Image 1 (cartoon, rainbow, N blue to C red):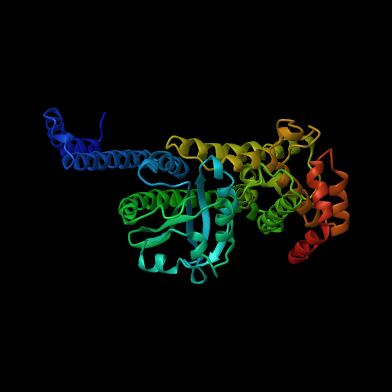
Image 2 (cartoon, rainbow, N blue to C red):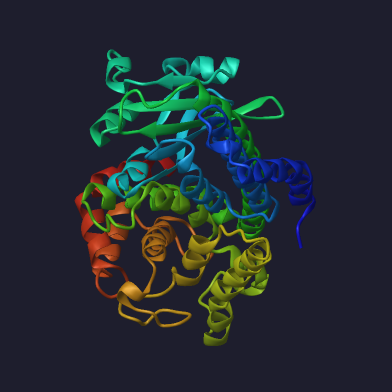
Length: 425
């Protein structure tokens, strides 16, 4: 069934289409004057049709990544681009962070290199675009960036980008970021492109803002539930901050050693930062008598304690399924971490006895961070171990409990881990 937008579109365009057909039938369109006009009208209808389809996708709550993919594959017939990038305003709109990107096959590594780069708005050439809502055309990027030697510009030039159009993203007159359309050819853009892109960027801003709101609302709710579980034990109340810091640091070690490069993207690192604190969210379902027991658990109690990974995964899966009904997803890594951080490399862990690379990388990283923090922290049933004793126990677990490549990397940077440890103790 056609929705209201489509009906309005048909109501407005059918009479003009009818006129177009009549003109075509009598051959007038073949004239040198009329033909370009009709081509322009046709192009306008085509653009309008694509924009209506974009709005329909947004109304169906397609994820923003899905919206961006649709835009990239659909609008290139109207606007010449090889790359689309989006930077969002952070830290009270004082910082721009490259947050999304999509490129053609010749530039497929470009988004990975750009996403995550941050810069103060006041130290970039983008301040006026944000402040005054003014689009910008650059038709010779190399000449324009002379004396503007930023990391972002360097990566663009190395990839072969030579021109770009930059537009502000605003919702209810509030700036939320910037969008870039870039090309590998010089002198490719003009004012006609801006006219169409202003409309497109408005639609993008609305979709992006909605998805950001959903992300933050759901994440904040689940993080609050996680903190509720941790707060039941005062000795582990700061566990979340330490877990996040250790997990991120271990991931950075792997990046330095060029390990798992195909997986360690900027979004992966952000996922580790967001979801590592949720690893024990399922403890909210464990009884106090077991969770806070000052001595060793009985086998029955330990079996009950082990269920926290199932409880936690169920919480995130429920959230995931509710969002999936709206064609939206954000908890994949969270589920992997919750469900897999007690699996062992040799297959002797729980809940599913996964082993080796069957265990998701995110869970293998968090497993190391979790045990390290447990060893170095006070618990109802033990005193904290010193750093050296703790790290040695971690190393002893290489190949049995832990991924040996992660432990090798951790061992290489143990002095740096020690500095982080001291910041908490």
